[in-house]
Amino acid sequence: MAAPPPLERAEKILGVPLHRTEITLESGEPYDEGASYALSQHFYGKDGELRDAIRNMTRFLAAFARQRQDSQKDAAVLYSLLGNLHYIAGNFNESANCAMRAASLNRSDITYWVELAFSLRALGEFDVFEGILFNFEGIVQLWQQSTAPDLTKEALLGLIKEAKS
Amino acid sequence: MENHATLVKDYVPRSFGKEYWNVKGPPQYPMFAAVALGLKPVMDDWVDVQDCQRLADACAAYGLVMAPDIVFAPAEGSKEGIIGGRNITTTYSRGEKFTGQNTEGQVHVLIARDKQAASDARKWAWYPLVINGRSTNKPFVDHLRYGKCLGYPPCCVNFFRTYNNWHLFSNPFETLKNTAFENGNAIGSHYCNNFLMDKGYSYIHHLPCSYRCKASTALAQELEKKLDTLEPAFIQTANRLLRKPLLVFGEQHFAIFDGELQKTAGGASISYRACQYFRNPSRPEEDIAFFDEIQAGDALVMNDSHILIKDGTTTIRKAERKKEWFLIDFD
Image (tube, rainbow over all chains, first blue to last red; front, side):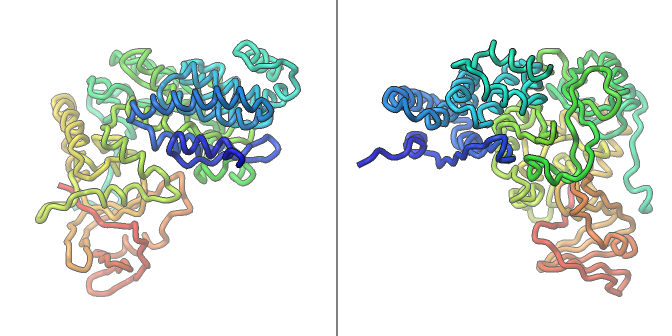
């Protein structure tokens, strides 16, 4: 019997019903904060449960990444969910790293860019936050064309600079 | 007796906070006082781009700092076609970076006793402005963090967490449902009456979890006590206005009456000498069509299904009532 889809397994691990759809520039849809909302409602003020959830998701994601290297889009969703958990816990460096990893694994979904922008804002990096939001489409398009394997902070600053020019 | 035109007049401070009032007028005068008096950690505000330095100077006069965030610039056209338009109100703004050289719009600012507190609050202070045709909501948890930063009571932050969705809930109506009724007393406490906050008369600037919320009342009483020694005329005016009965239609949308509320088995009524209508500027589509009749009448009866507007013994209008509309009085 085939294993259940990764999002379903994540729902089971976290105990929260989740819904994720890929949001692209072309779809004309805004960032869907549904998963972030559900996770906030479930874990806000429950620090112990949140710590356990982060630990369990991290383990699941590590195993998934090892076993399913062919499924980058699913891995991106899982990184994004882990990033959401870190964001709720106030671990903003970790949530930014998860968003960058997700954007590296799936360059079409704009969700990860919004998550990255707000993680950086939470770190007090207001200029970078505005750099992303004011050049959103340009940055996403440039990243889609980029040959760099991973989105890093340095690469992000380069994208913002290029999108502005 | 008060007439329609003079029911809620702007309060002009005699001394305390006058510098702030001269730039910003009444809307957040009590909150500025609360921050200046060390009772509230941070407040947020909006100021015309041309007046930004004047507001910074007014803050400095009270030992406060002001951190500019982003400019709410006038938006062109309808929200149709905006990505994420469903999440914004009918009247919306375009986001523009604050440069200090902006020529139009209002700067969103954070005001606190020190730079760090203002900067920390700014992290969670994002509003869904439209930038290049796209509106982006902040993560939901930021609303809760922001409420905490602004000094809102945890019970009210938690209440907001449950009922924040204005597509699904009328926040004032949910607050009413969460208010424990005490026989013989008014429904709410004037300390928890936030309806007139945009006219500058409210001791709180958040949506209370109940119109008798103990934590909100404690915050309000502290402000009342301190401000009474500095600006007693404000306290007298606020206490008088905050006790007047209201017909509530929704958030920032209500009518205030110079009159008395009577509760009956089948509903409630108000007999009044004067009234004034306040619309929610962000949701003009919710304006009611029968306020002229309310103004022409002298009594209003609300039952489960209708509002009857009377002039003497004559019913001059029978309007269908939405379930979330309610009458409320305060002591």
